[in-house]
Length: 202
Image 1 (tube, rainbow, N blue to C red):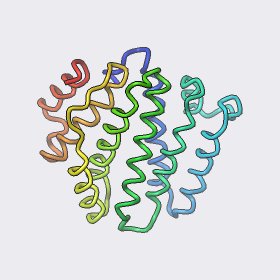
Image 2 (cartoon, helix red, strand yellow; image 1 turned 120 degrees about the vertical axis):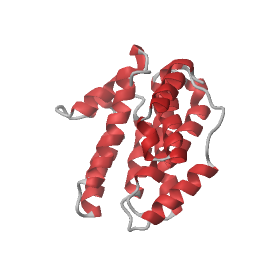
Image 3 (cartoon, rainbow, N blue to C red; image 1 turned 180 degrees about the horizontal axis):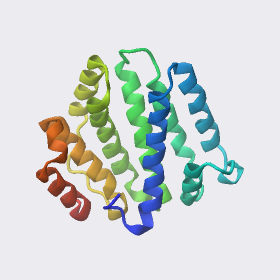
Image 4 (cartoon, rainbow, N blue to C red; image 1 turned 30 degrees about the horizontal axis):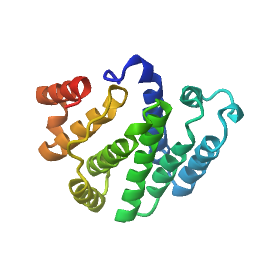
C-alpha cells in the first residue's frame, strides 16, 4: 500500500481487503457448503449497483470509491469458490482462482481510469496469483501444481503506471520468495526490491 499514490490508495485497499475477507471465509468455515453460502452473499452484493448495497458493511463502503466499477469482482468470488473443492484441487481450480484475481485487478485498473493497461494488469495479476498459491496452499500436491503453473506462467518485462505499482510489488516479492525460500520474503534485499518496483517500476 505504501507504493500506491493517494489517488489510488483507498481503491487498492478495498481490493486487497476483499481478497483477504474471501480467503478468511474459506479458512474459517468448517464445511465447504458454509463457505459457499457466504461467498454467494458477496457474489449477489457485487452483482448489484452500489446504491442497492446494505449499510453497515465497511468493505462495501470502501468499494463505493470504485464508482460502479465493481462488477468484475464477481470473478474473484468465483475464483475463491473454486478453492472449496475436495483436496487435492485440480490445476483447473487453481487456474480459475488465478483468473479471478486477474479479473479483479483489471477491474481495479478500470476504476482508476487505467483502461490502457488492462492486458498488462491481467498478465501480471494472473502470474502473481499462481506464485502466491504455490506458497500458501496447505496440500503438498496442490502447492506443487501451483508452483509448476507459476513457473510456466511467470510474467517478465511487464511494467505498470504508478497507480498500479502495488501489483508489481506483490508479483516481484512473490517470485523472489518462490525462487529463494520463505526467509527471502523479509530480507533487506526483498525490501530493496519492493522499493525499486514500487518507486521506479523496474
